[in-house]
Image 1 (tube, rainbow over the protein chains, first blue to last red):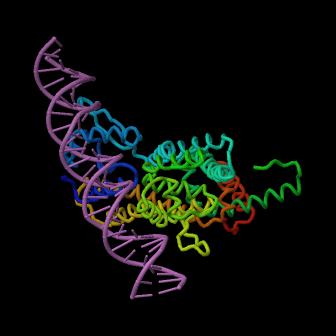
Image 2 (image 1 turned 90 degrees about the vertical axis):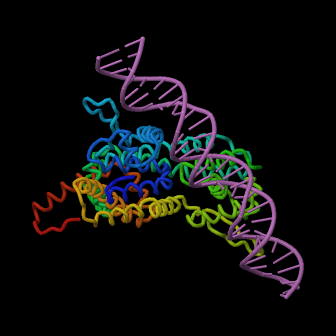
Image 3 (image 1 turned 135 degrees about the vertical axis):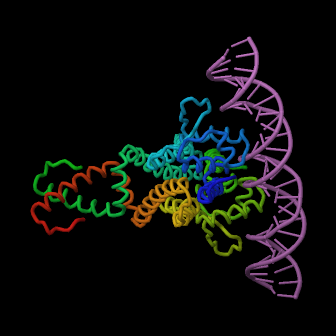
Length: 191
Length: 191
DNA sequence: CCGACATTTCAGGAATTTCTGAAATATCGA
DNA sequence: TCGATATTTCAGAAATTCCTGAAATGTCGG
């Protein structure tokens, strides 16, 4: 691997973290490399930079494309495929959230739904179903919220984040205002 | 494995999903089993239920305890350790978020900070650092928001979730109100 | 301290995942 | 169509992770 020290450190870190994130070392490294690269890279360049086999890079790129984390960029007069990462970090966040949800949450949600349809045959099963219902409820609330929030454009999402827990003050304020309005004009609709 | 069909399906699913969640099959199964169990279980009971080795259960329980997802419950007049999962699903969510952050996010944040301190030695490194700064900024915003939100008590958190994207309407409303108030009383403080 | 359990540790075998090199396939210009 | 180049596939080697059984350690009542 022949990279500027800063880049190398970054790439190696992503490689190491890979296992904790459910991706393998090479995939993590390829992503990191593409992420900090000023220009799109082709497979050969990645091979040179990381010192892994050509086929490994091919597979890694395929996986990253499946995650929508590597996108092919055509370079004029060059037959080779070149790749970048999406450049807007917020977009990357959305993509990551979306893909993780699809792989890590949705299957469980559907299993839970299925099991909750069944009729329990014992007290034990009844209790289990009760617990599953709790889990299902939580996950459903989370995903509903997520579906809502993911549609917000970046700017609004950022301002929401910046607000943080202070949102609750807003909520309190809203409760008061609603109370007031109701006091005066009983027909007012709630927000 | 000798379990009611409903429980068995649930346990098996958690085992299969384990790899996607960065835990191994046994750990996933143990967790699922404890989660739906009406009473705390001891290691022997888990062995019987799952058909895995005693030592495997021991290691699995240790890991779950490290994640704060299994808690020892002492049963009077019984020397054996018994285990449950925290019963409040919201608490489980917090725990999970906390632990994942600690393992999957914090190390990257600290590496990024370190690399951003260094002086770039080339245009390439300068660009890389620029990208790292973007990533760092995003992660920092997210974790700040998270630190804020995690302190909310369950009820408030739930109502926030329920509100979903409609929060933004609240934001718009707030902007208006603040504008009005400012128009009338210039010295008014912002919320 | 002893004996009866309960739990943990750990070496190494089993299972799984990752990675490679070689071969197959695809794509292009001439 | 052919040859040059680019990419993918895939069998099996390498690496890693998981799991087990046996031995060690811990803990309690007597």
